[in-house]
Length: 284
Image 1 (cartoon, rainbow, N blue to C red):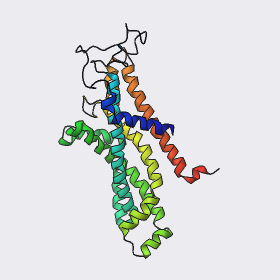
Image 2 (image 1 turned 30 degrees about the horizontal axis):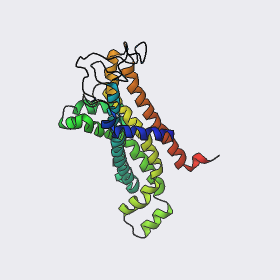
Image 3 (image 1 turned 90 degrees about the vertical axis):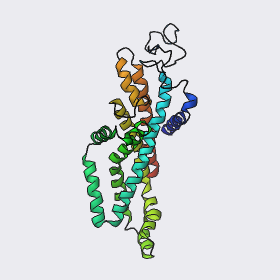
Image 4 (image 1 turned 60 degrees about the vertical axis):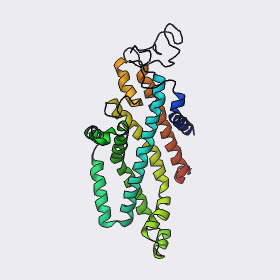
């Protein structure tokens, strides 16, 4: 429940970013390009060292860090939910078809998943982003669309295997045999009988997949091939903050803390869902 509360708060911050953020996240304040006082100054709250206009200070070129954190939540939450929705659709469809039909259909689909699964996830993600970054797809929404597609392409295989395993364990059950004997079409059996009964572990996998997608975005932005600047993301803020890390650690620590707290909240939520959905977790 604590994780759920944090997730709801992060989602509200993302939705209400234009109202919450005190400044435009891409605007250089004061026109000087000079870093305003930050939490690293000797006496926090002393007007000689801090600027009350910027509670968390500004980055090295004068952009308000608080505003960039608020707007960065929007990108991180989008990257958490949209690619995982695509992973769910692709993986569930492939796994359902492979598990239900079996035979050569199962063999072909599972060999494709094996080929994709053989690539290291992060390396495959970097290759896709670096190769297509300067294409028309890479220009859409500042690179967000390409990132959604790349994360989905890399990670759908785990979902497909999970759903296939569930379908294989369910398709010989009595209620499925009864539906088949009464002439119910295969599409309807998959949609009305197999999918709802296979959904419990899938929901848990989705909850654990969201922080993985957020970490992928942060990693890509940190190495400079994520969302195009000046769009603020937490990963890009960490990358930019390292330029002044020796003088002030806060431009790195603040977005890193945001990433860690939200990811940990999704992990807590996934763990709670697993305990609630799986009756075996309640034994003893």
